[in-house]
Image (cartoon, rainbow, N blue to C red; front, side, top):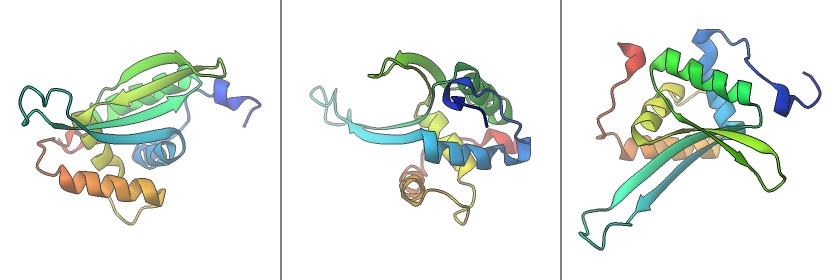
Length: 144
């Protein structure tokens, strides 16, 4: 590795057949699975309650996060949004964020076997989410 790799890392030479395993590790280290119940519009109608789900990857390296986005899009045809922000330490950071439908497709792809190595707390969260959201109609584009 190189000094200050957090800011300078770019593309990583990961063969396509191992990319989803790499991505699972990336999610464990520099990612977030966020879910919550959104009741913002429930004052209009109590049925306006939604389960929100987001998957986010974070990096201080623009080339790395763009490579991540491009590779995910190429391999499984799922697109996320890229956002730049400055954190409390005045460091420029990049976020690659996937909304509900894309998150479900992505999570099913990277957690394709329950026996794979993964950060246990995230794997348990993902397993529960996918079980609860199983009725949500998301095709698996990598199987087409």
